[in-house]
Length: 468
Image 1 (tube, rainbow, N blue to C red):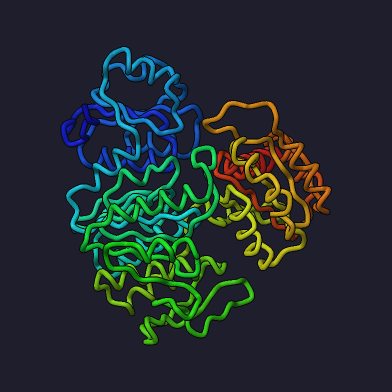
Image 2: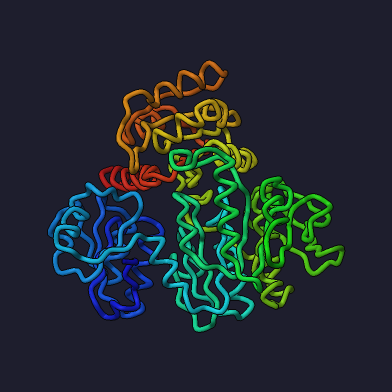
């Protein structure tokens, strides 16, 4: 017997376990907008859970069996394990259930154009960029982003056209539940090695994702990535490449960066200049992301002049090198980067911003990732003057007992990095306040709940100011 289908539960109650997650919260709002009764639960009170309540979606903090009582269908994320009290109860009661990725795939069905943006790095930024491009070129897409974009007022949007744009996540091969007609592959890298056997297994799975494209579909890939290029050479539909190398269809002509690391370039398609972009977001990787967007927009017959204007006004998505506050003359930023490659990339942007000293505050994410990429963690913050490392964020995992944040710190110090173990958010805030100086820049990094440290520091500053 197959999975239940969301279309059979119109107007009924859908309960979502782990509703505070970036993708789940967006799906909750999308279902509500489509007329479903939606409720949710999560283990932490966050800005997202508060926002969902404000949108009229009741959210319970804590996973309790009674949360699923009265639900007609339950949706859960892959991080919600079978022994979760709510999953145990829905099984006991025989309530139909769906995993998050399956739901997203079902919602995408029926759209003439279904665009899936995948890759180890840059999915949210690229999907956000493309959202703005498609909207400003009149394509009126339905959108699902694994993050938040002010331009669309959150992480989802319901459009009136036949286009659906979605971030396609490779974690646990969940993107194989989608049915794309256009696939953008940004890169292939070693991550999620708690699920994948090795990098070859990851490449193979990306190949399966491209294999979902119909004969009339389009594969768009970063041609400078050897693994991506190899997969594009095997697809049974049209393919186009973007990148810095001369063999790519889409290239940045006359590329230059300003003092803050923001790229400006001519948009070149097979030698023809189609427009010019002045990015407001910094980093070489955003040049790559922008080229991917333009290649996709072109395939949808978008006005390339308007597409370039849209990219030139793109201000970034939340949790992507986001300036959260300035306290005592210290600028605080946050970035979702949760593996060494992403941390290294975003620090290359941070170091170009005006600053006295650069602080990197790292929340390592999952024990399995830290163990697999341990050596990379030991040097990824080299561009920072001081690195603070919190305890490892377990997410869906149980502590195996053989890997600790203190081991990362010890290894960093052996590599000449000024690193300090500050286990909790309170420890980290205390250390920062005791040692930071006016003009410093603090960058918190991770995809767990480390963004809440920025909120905590701001809220404590407001409280202290009022008391004075």
